[in-house]
Image (cartoon, rainbow, N blue to C red; front, side, top):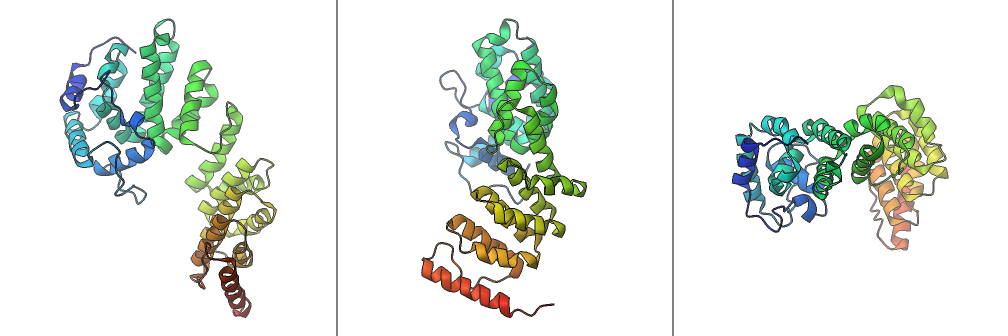
Length: 335
């Protein structure tokens, strides 16, 4: 980082910051066990995230939501919402870290994906200047905090991290992998960049709606590695293509892992093809309550019926409900 002062930025941060504790750093990312949930709540309170997935009514541990949101709104207005922060951030120097208040981190998290290239470039630049300075504790602390910000931004960090990872080396690659593993809890491919890339292609196909990727996803359903089978099932469910149903049913009959089975059941429910109903009814008798619940949910989406099935009910009650399902399906008029 360049050794240049940033009085405008630091002045805004210090004006808005609460009283310092210890070394002057009291980050929500360190105190909160789930920083991404905290970030979602923060974005909603700042009016930056209006999606249906925003966490509503979630407490922010150790914070007054109203006071925190008001304080951050004031800082955002002072900083022209984000442009000044993004412009001045590269000029932080390691001696400024005690003044790196929770508001700075929170603003970068709230800005989200627009801050990601800056943060990744910061990691790359500081690693290149590693001769001497970057081995200092302050430098390590700073890079650790940048990594935590990227993790808290979450999904929006992934495209930039994955784009940079194949060419990254040494410590920069290690930092990017830390970000990746912090966002993606399962799977974890360690340092195998090629496996991360393949998994990300499968995952991205579902999220982007890329129908040309369907053959690749169908092939991945029978992969020897359950992590690719799981990613493919999730992606096919998002794409909603009925030609995937026979492949999903075949994969369901051969799958034993709970996560993969549940992903296939969810995909079948989302696709909504009646050919899946018999297999879904069969999974109502699974020994795993979570699998039974997933099958019941898929059937409800597909048929708009329930027949009193409760995945947590005693076995005899579940048996009667399954019998009602089977009777209805066998007596249903065939087209």
